[in-house]
Image 1 (cartoon, rainbow, N blue to C red):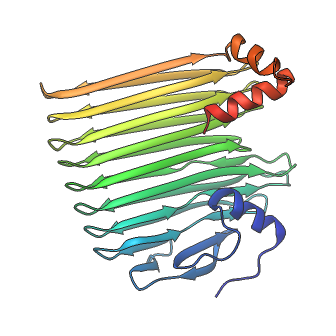
Image 2 (image 1 turned 135 degrees about the horizontal axis):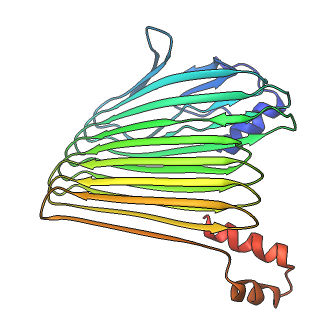
Image 3 (image 1 turned 180 degrees about the vertical axis):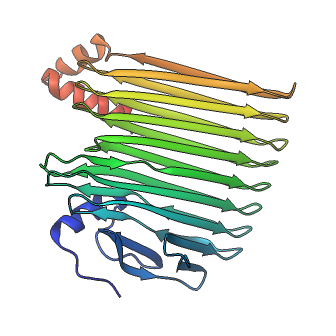
Length: 309
């Protein structure tokens, strides 16, 4: 069963999960601290934890071309919650997991959602995980999101993770930890924009423990107005493996960005690389677009949209 959604809830779901209607297959939609709709599928079980703190999502071995949606939306001011969700992905499966949180805060109290997600990815399984964060509302209360993600990749498995935060979140600290086994692969793409006096901290820690394992962690961000961002990424290679981390950031107005990439090689055949680039929009890019008839503001938006794709 699914509760009737109001227009704000519908808009938040569209922003964070690209949902225009109730999804088919497995899903759980959480609103203002409770589940308002849930469904399992023959291959994916969505279950409440016994202690009531979150969900256990169990995906059967060999499950292919299926998805599970677990978005969170908040439309009341003053709510604060921590939710624990565990994902058990069976061997040889290939699934898409869509999460994300949207907060519309029109009040004077802070609203906060902290989601702790753990992924146990079985041998030779593949997951694509999409997590979008979004904030709106004209209240003075803050919109706060502090996600924690843990990923445990078994032999030959792959996790592609898309982390997106483009608008409206006043404060966030994203902590992501991963352990990569033999022949497993981790791919993370972060896209982030802050404005006003917002702050955003991203911390990635990846241990490559198996031979032939790999990790690629890339962040692209824009800091506008008086906002602040920090990007920490530590990749440790304990075996013959490959690791790469990259931070590309555009600063505008009085924005500030601190990038702290770190590598630790504990094996002679560990190949680890890092890159970091922070700067303003190039003048020649603006001039070229303005010569086509765009205003300076329109040219900036075009460049930013292309950069964050």
